[in-house]
Image (cartoon, rainbow, N blue to C red):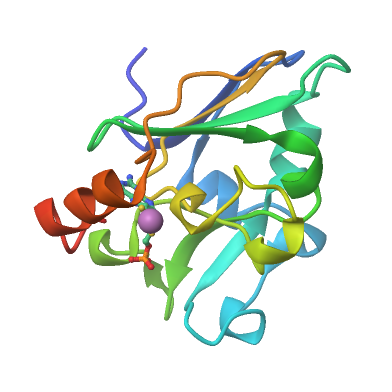
Length: 164
Ligand SMILES: Nc1nc2c(c(=O)[nH]1)N[C@H]1C(S)=C(S)[C@@H](COP(=O)(O)O)O[C@H]1N2
Ligand SMILES: [Mo]
C-alpha cells in the first residue's frame, strides 16, 4: 500500500526493515530526540533523532559493519564504517517547528557532529548526506559516489552550490 509520508527506509543487514514518516520520528521518545543541534555545532540548526534510536527499532545484525546513506533525490551515496558514527550520528528533521527545508538538506539530513573527531578518513563532512531517504546496513563497504579527490569535490560544489 502506498505510504506517501514515508521519508526514510532502514534496511539491509537488519532484523526488521522499517520505514519512518516525519510523524514517526517526532513521536520517538524524549531519549531519542536531539533538541537544537546548534549546541553541538554552531553552524547547524534544527532538531533531530539519534541514529541509535532508529537502529534499535530495526535491530542491527551483529555482522553489519558499514552504514550506507542514500539520497535518491540527487543520486548521492556514502558508505562509511558504522562503529564510529553509531552512537553519535543524528537525523535532522525539523527546524523552528517546521519540516527541514530542502536548502538545509530536508526533509531528512544525516549529521555527524564533530566528524573530525572520528579519526576515520572515510568519515568527513561529505558524509553528512542531505535528503537521505534510505539507510542501508551492510557487511562490506557499499556503494559510495562521494567525490574522490579535490577536483571532483570542487566540481560537485560548482555544479550545485546549494545542494553540494
Ligand atoms: N544529497 C547530497 N548530500 C550531500 C552532498 C550532495 O551533493 N548531495 N554534498 C556533500 C558534501 S560534498 C558536503 S561538503 C556537505 C556540505 O553540506 P553543507 O552545505 O550543509 O555544509 O554535504 C554533503 N551532503
Ligand atoms: Mo564536501
